[in-house]
Length: 114
Length: 115
Image (cartoon, rainbow over all chains, first blue to last red; front, side):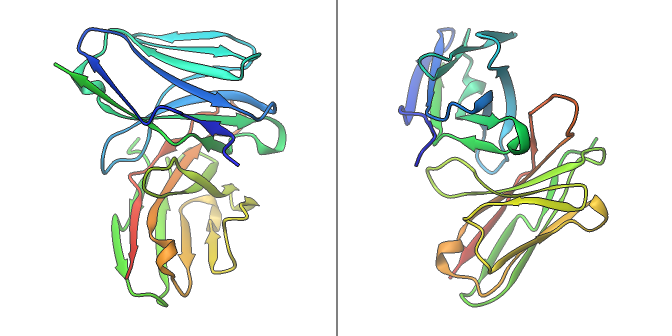
């Protein structure tokens, strides 16, 4: 079963506008969430993370929002730049003995047009 | 800090052959993870090590797969009697357990093609 889902396979945005990428999860044991960016022929690169005790974390142009009751998180990129064009993966981790083992979504291809 | 490195970057093999991949993690990281990624999907967890101890294996990891991390440094992933379904990108990641940080740092991956 897919415990982490990214329901939008792709997103197209104009440069300078906001990009919003969404992610839903089903496992209540997840207590840490991460976003990764991946360019072709490279491994995923860590972007930003959030603990389940928070509802927002911001790092420069990137903000992650967590809605635990809805089991939903989103990544906002403002302003979007052409260099942000990549595949974005949402990932989640349980605590305890499963700490650190990441469960990924299917990814969303973001294209930022100049 | 040179990052996580993986070798080879690409491997083409015939069905039934054995292959071995190597991962060199970031030197101070004590945890090392292996993931597999197929087209259109996110990475899927295979196994992980803390230092030299293999702590967990996914049910995705059949008996044909074996991983080691001797001396808690580099790791190898071997696939015996490869099948066409093994074709995928194999990713290695590392992190430091115990700091409260969950982020893992990935290598560029080894793309395996089984013909």
